[in-house]
Image 1 (cartoon, rainbow, N blue to C red):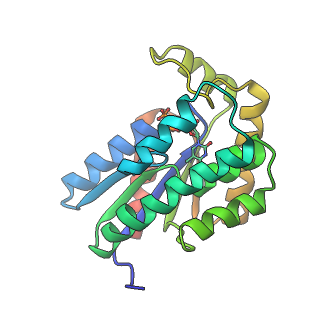
Image 2 (spheres, rainbow, N blue to C red):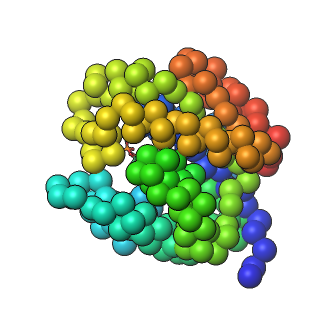
Length: 208
Ligand code: TYD
């Protein structure tokens, strides 16, 4: 495999934790500093991924938990192979909203599949690729829910899940961060956005 030259940063957290705001602020700061940034997301970071995103987020009927896990993994396999790896080989900074930690937290802890199996499935899909840094925006699901409620957007399949589901997802993310402290930067997402952005920028600048 061609060696990776760029820097790969993923953002993780529950729904309503403010990932999109932080991704926008970080992208602007890095671009202003003269870096080439590829901003992308899962699910839906490729053309095929957009189709899969539509199924996993908006299909109205039931989707069996294992089928849901496989759909996210299929999106991931195509996205990493055709979008992320080429950008890293070109030496770019890839700024990605959600990756395999979301599968372990949502399909593992949330849907109660075996977390190790979900992780192995994603690692197989992505040929073992792991980010240089994962920023986890940690937030109490009750506060996240208030934020989502004040948004105009209708809830997607995952957002519509009950508080217990989101509490398990949060615990799932925190457990992952504990196992890999060198990859994760865990931040309290209740902190004001500009101070969060400053923390993230400091860590990213040390990395690139
Ligand atoms: P996201 O794109 O963050 O939602 P939006 O930006 O529209 O608010 O995430 C989509 C949903 O997909 C989110 O609820 C988490 C879920 N998800 C999983 O369940 N497993 C996964 O592997 C990924 C990547 C996302």
